[in-house]
Length: 339
Image: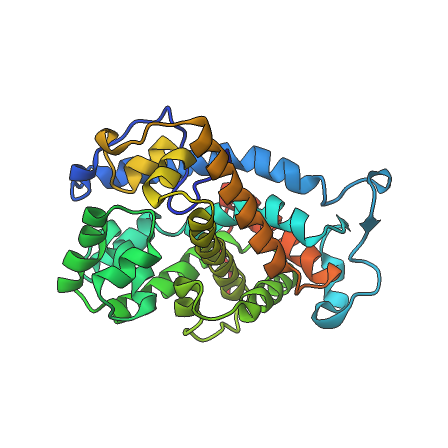
């Protein structure tokens, strides 16, 4: 089972934390922020190790080529600024970037300064998350949000969306939530070569632009916002896009595998289950059959993402892998952008 959370936040089953009734408790936010940071640290070593099998690899490893050679298409000569990489196919890219992208795309959610931004709207950090992320869908009804947030239980959706929507306009909050993401990127990715970020952003945008509309509503929602000219912002938006894309195809994969969302959420990790608002009493009885169905759902998700990455050239896949590694490493050693 992957270390990173699929849809919300990473943790291990040994972690214990507040129950769903404590979502509104002010003490919950520091615990969740701390847990998020622990998840990033726990995921970092194993995920980057796997990426390094393909990045800056020795010539004896296999299909090695460098960005220092002639590049193709959009990447141009600027790609020489990136490290040498091993060419990977779409299947490898899907598997190797899954955890880092999952962590990257959600890292701004519960950042303390994101929370401060929410306070300016009269929202706590969870309400800002609910209205900010789901608000990309528009001022929609609760059923629409529940469908997009498939793995959350309904009372949690009511807290994050229905009740929060009485405090602020979700469309306006969504627009500011995107700006909160860009502000996080400005605090974090200033040490990365802008060419690496620009090339990653181009590849990520190519993937989501090729994805059919209507299948991943949150992807469609984020696509309504203007594409940033700033490569730091464009690259971080790319991680959000890819995270939502994988989450969307995973929802379909879980259904195809014959799992209900509650069971799939629990099998992902009991801590994920708790943080999506479920209690111990809701937990399903785990069986070998259910575990097999969950593995099938993961296989279907990987296969769907492989198809999404098929639109990329070798150079663009390299750019996606290189940018993923650079940004993921920056979470541990953030450098602010200097103007």
